[in-house]
Image (cartoon, rainbow, N blue to C red; front, side, top):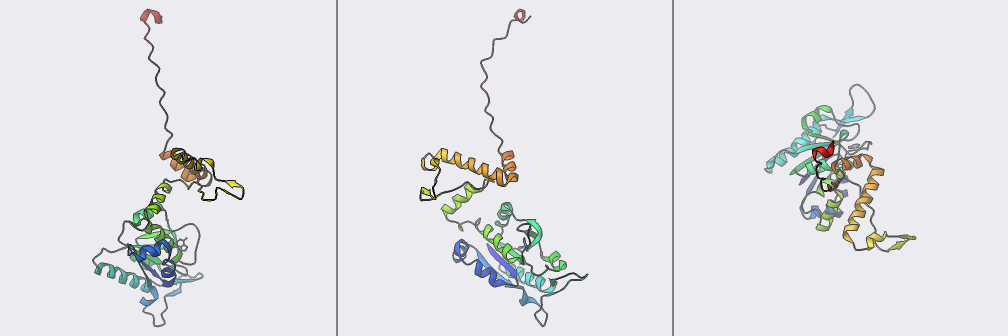
Length: 257
Ligand code: ADE
């Protein structure tokens, strides 16, 4: 996976994503990341990339020219390397809300370009020409698109083969069932007077799994009733068929009268 982040603050991206699991994936060349300075593409002699909005209103808007030229330069770099033009994700509070399914879809791509806006956003005409996906990370407004881009890169990268170790991947499987995570405990067995639930010490694997599912269901119903409903719809309770009693011998006609 080749990530290209178009931004006015490239160091925010490179510095923050260089540690932990993503840093390890970068070192192993399982993913690559370049942060491209949009300002390098402005044709303005004062290096300006923003201006006032037509029609009035507070704040500045990023201009179409540097954004468009920056994006096209990155697309050319990708196609010159023999790969297909990339999807361009504009990170904006006005986009579709990011979720795990979207991450799975993006993880199939070879390249992804993230376009990070600042100020009041980007001139609509550039967006119309370069953007393929408008994505938000939630119903709140941040000062720029860098943090949302990093959130998405982190989430997508976990799905790239080899990025997570075997132990890390098996954790994903158990948590991607559409329910919230069950409570977990490590040593000591008792802390602040609170004991680890006995069932987790029992060594009875099937009972432990049953307990975990119950805990997930309880927590999900309370905190995310929407997810709980969806889970219940997809997993209707199994109704055990009652065993039919041996059929009574039909009565003879004259007996029924
Ligand atoms: N830019 C500012 N706020 C944002 C959000 N919530 N999601 C994506 N991009 C943003």
